[in-house]
Structure formats: C-alpha cells, structure tokens
Image (cartoon, rainbow, N blue to C red; front, side):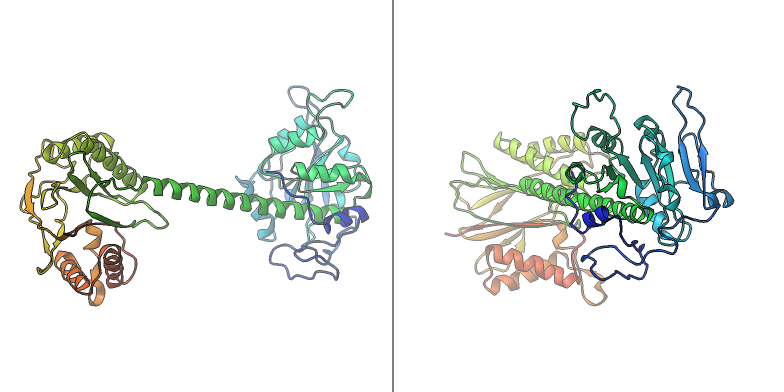
Length: 505
C-alpha cells in the first residue's frame, strides 16, 4: 500500500538543506521552537554536519563478481574492525547481522553498539561528499553501502540494511534508451525487491513534483541532490526508518482487524438457524465459547421440523476447545441436519454420525457427546437418545423441574466401534419447557475456594428458583448462564450451549 505524502514539515527541511537531528528512542526530547507536532526533530548530535576526524570511516573496494560485474564499494566505520566485526565487501552481508528487518531496526536504537545501515544506489556514489558526514545522534558513524546499479544493489540488500537512498535518475532494468518508459520505473523496481526497507528518493534540485510522486508510489521521503548535507541525510534516514516501521505496524494491525472481522462473520454464519416453520413450539438458545475472543467452540446444537410435523432437537459437545474442535462440531451439526431431513433418527442416526466423526477427526482420541430429542407432532411425547451426554431438564406447571431418564445413556460418539444408543420414550404433557445443555453449564465452580462443581443438582435448583421468579425463554437462559459464571467467580473455561423449547396449550 503506497505511503501517504509526508506532512509539509518534511519538505521545507529538504528544500532548505537544513534540519535538526532526530533523537533516538529513549533520548531526552529537545525539539527546537517551530517544530511541527509529532516531529522527531531534536538538538543536533555532537559532530553532526561536520567532517569526522581521520580514522572515522574506511572504504573497501570489492573484488569483481564472477560474472564480470564490477565490485561494490562500501564505506564502514573503522571501529567495526577494531571490535571484531567481519563486514563483508564482496557479498554485502555483515557477520552477526540480525535475521529479520524488525530485529535489525531494533538493534539500531537498542544500545551503544547499534548502527544504522544505509544502502546508497547512484551512478557515482564514490564522488558523493555526504558519505563521511553521516552520524547518528550518539556520534556513531552510519554504515554506508554503495552500489552503482540495481544488480549490485540486490547483492547488498541484506536484512541488516535499514534504509535505501535511491537516485531516481538511475536507469531501471529494461528501460528504453529514450526514457519513454513508465515513470519512476527504477523506484518501483526497488520497492518490489525491497518491500520491507525504508526508501529515500534522491531527485534533482527543485523537482518537487517528481519527489512528491515518488512518495505517492511508496518512498518514505524525497531529498534534493544539490541541497543535501550530512546532517539532513542523517535525519532523513532515521525518519524514513521510523516511518516505515510505523507503516508496517499499522498495516499489520489493519490486516489483523480485517481477519478478525472475517472470522467473526464466518463463525456467526456457522451457528444454526432453527427450521421450525409451522411448529407451535417456541425456540431459544444461548451460546458462549470457552476460547478467548472466539465466537464458536466445540459445542453445537440444531433444531429442525420434518414434513410429518415432528420437531427434532440436538445438542452436542466435541472434546476440546480449539478451532479444530469447533470445525468438527460444525461438520457434525450439518451432518445431523441432513440425516434428520433424510428421515433417519435414533440409533441409526447416531451410528451414521459416529462414522462421520471417525472420518473427520484429526486424532483417534477425539470424541463427541450428543443428546437428541424428537418431539411428536402433537407435542405431548418425545423420543430421547443420549450418547454420553447430560440428560435434558423438563419443567412443567405445578411440578418441580426434573431431569429426563438417563438410564439408557449410550457411549459418546467415537469411543466404541459398533456401539448402540437406545431410544427412550418420554411423556411431556400439554405444557412444558425442555432445556438441553452442554456440560459447560454444570461444571462451573461454586462455594468457598471454588472447590466444588455446580453439578446437575445445583443446576436444577437454580432453574427451579429462576422459573419461580417468572423467567422464561431468552431471559431464563441469559440468567442461568450469567449466574453460573458469577458462581464460578469469572468466565467459564469450557464452552456453554443451552437450547430451550417451550410448548404452551
């Protein structure tokens, strides 16, 4: 994404040839009067803008490359050799350089040993008067590597290079002799081969339009060749490096937000929409994943009405809480809906779901619990199948809430090949509320020290009290989940799914 044009504060500095030095991170700010808000300008470093004493820099000439390409010149601090640094002159790779751009940029500001490295690409870099005057705010020389063409530049473009100073007059690969090619082709080529490096465009004095266009294309700033001095270039390098780092951080943050939004839309789309057209039953559901910042967990549920008027409801739980378990739960839910609409139910349905689980799971130890209920068209009777899952809660007027029979509870899906799941017939009555839930609702901690589980008995007592308070439907589920969380002393670590079906006479 091309960087925006710098604020006006950067252009006058380039045009005038004068700009104060920039303090490094952690340096006491001392911006001069008139500095724009957010400007990194500060008092010039000792020695900035003046030629260093003898021995400050050394210049090595590389041997010719095997293909006959001329060697590459690199200006480097003399103390590198004294400190034992092995700065290469043929390949442009410094021993001990950071393995990533971010690490190299952090090292430039992290301590006394840090150095900025500039790769200068222009026709006659050796004749530039600015090379011996490049000092950072602490007085350390800025490492300078020089290349006369883009071929040499690519060989020197290593991870420890922080900034590129590019002469826009340099011919790009494949450029026509008359120059009638794409504008700023050389800059676009450099941006392609160095997408993570800061780039300064060097243009002719007074060519503001070309410089501004270079920034629009992707350079961090532009400088005028005839008005350049060491202090200005030193400041521009640090500004460009920091701006590139900021641009990359902002781009990563934006990409992260977009991915999060896409994931949220995807997860919401994977939650079911009940198919109850024509049914007199009222449906409500509550879902809370255990994973942080997630919308979907390993719990799953669904409700459909088949053409004969039977309402089928299901709730299940894949062991685990990660994205793989969430994906498997969605697969099982979709398979259950398709098989139910195809006419399967009871043991035949659960056996087929076990085959789906065994085929789709990533590990043989993964299993899933399941509870299915098929309610007769008249709403007075239901068939119940349990596969290692907690039994639903039935509430009827004039009677205390109770758990449906669970003596015929079969094994969880994926545990026993060839398992069977008996179907239990249940009488519901004329008016009732049936609550299906996952174990996340009953495994929350309670009491002093949070040493005990809420359990099914605690949940039944809690729902009985909430029903006596007149809570129904969504309000009942919301109150139940919130109270379990409060009793636990904070967010629940397991996924929680609750489904409520009500029938009124």
